[in-house]
Image (cartoon, rainbow, N blue to C red; front, side, top):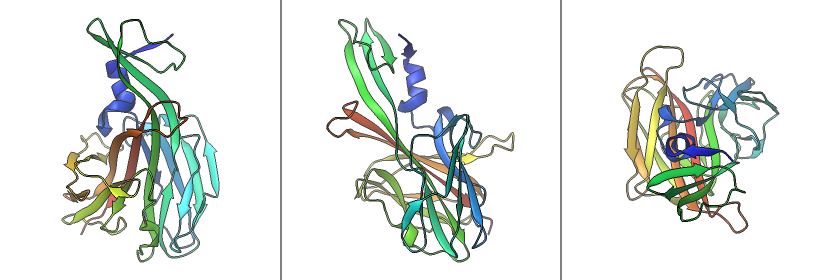
Length: 264
């Protein structure tokens, strides 16, 4: 029977800060490849973006093309610290790459004798006299966009289910000094007052990454001011009731979007 402190559980699933938790990501080798290129992507969970630590497994990697059709990625290989996906582009336009949904561990936390404890063992009974604080299963999706040639918008169409960031500014056309506007959706509806954490990826530098916290408005919209060029990851988490028959009464939804900001 293995117990986890509240801090350990928070690092795994409760805290939204990207720089302080194992954060899921999907990162392409190129955001602007050639129109017939084969795109390679890394998918992992990491504390430092994009330094892989735990492979993103048990999901169906998908690609939505400029024609709006969604297909399985050509090749997916699960390694120890990362999953590598490859896909040959069919021509010009914008492509959305997605890990698909991944069901993860079941978490419980409880309070007993003034102390908070937790477990990821579903067979462990709740200690006598303990007050259950939370009981949920993680559900994760990571995405990114690449554009070959001029950007188009068919691949930007929302999934309409689960948690997602829906770009209003094209994610392949972001420049320093401008703005990235998007909406937070859950099951196809805008999510108001939702926290979004955006972290700069500076894995090849000793410089501390820039971190920004945003809050969506009543229409689910948020704006990220693009102060400097670089590669970034936006993270959203949201709790919601799980469907009947799930392993826990709630799902802890996590969604990340990797994107690049160019110099003017």
